[in-house]
Length: 415
Image 1 (spheres, rainbow, N blue to C red):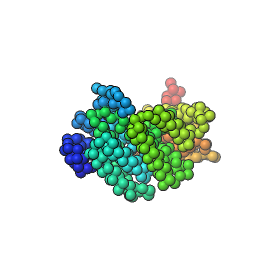
Image 2 (spheres, rainbow, N blue to C red):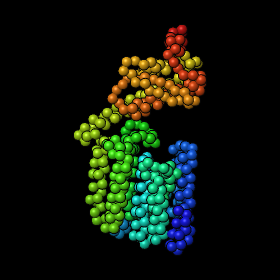
Image 3 (spheres, rainbow, N blue to C red):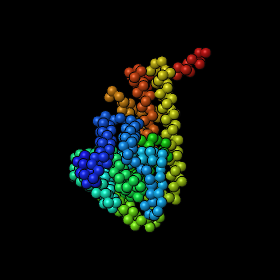
Image 4 (cartoon, rainbow, N blue to C red):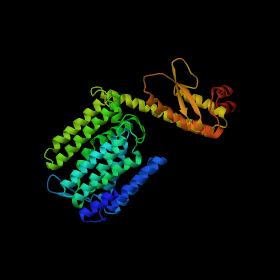
């Protein structure tokens, strides 16, 4: 990319002054992801790194300053709104690309189509430097995809996904003169329709379920296609086809000056609703309210488990010995309809703890999917880890039998 930026600067007659900030900040965002690939940094640290990189690029003069009407006269000068809008653009696109990087060839293929879309925008707006840089990235991604298609031999990692996303976000700011880029942004947003829709589904899904939006799950669009019987190759081809079609739709809206924009907006909205139904996010529109009620009930159950998990975590501090904590732990398990002992029709669940230790609880078998139970039972892990840290052992049924009643109950009886 550095060589392509040098060539682009020469072609554009601007030297490195235009492309050096983009090349440096793309290297920085790749470094953030690469370090995370070597040793997980955590979501907050990565977000700080992304915002810091975006601020550097903004301070070097790459920003959204004016939103002109690409379909007619008029323009809006952003003023101080330029900073938050630019940061939102530069931070959100890398994360959207990273979110869909869950199947071999998916993020790389999307990056290829988006780079070709940027190349056309550079050609259409009379900017050969943008054309050269975008074609260079498209060529690099095409070579990468040879080894990344299923079954993959090499992988993007967070570093590669952030690089693709930040490249698309930063170069798209150059596709029109003097910061008047709403047309280019609109094209990129439409071309990113699949990952944006996937991100939107994930946020709504996790918000309704009451879990963090950073929690990984196996319910992304490509996962759903696999569940519907698609092979990895067919699922990838279907997603590529949709990405290509949306890229062409975005470019056509720009070329025809937005004449068909309202009709296309309605079509994309209906497409999103149809996708939600086809992929099974909505089981039936007629029973949609029932599905929401079921989901909210599961959320309440999960919150109940989370509350008891916190109580047990506090009990580790309150109890003076492992035997008394074992009694409290058993009472908590009973409230959650769990047990340390197997019974007829029970299902074992194993917790992997630090130091190679494990712990087993038993739950009644039901029709709730395994992933939902894992979300509920994970709340017990902090208490078990603190128990190991304090007493170097885990509660067992033996300890429960040796302590007839909880310590605070013994004290109240004595009093």
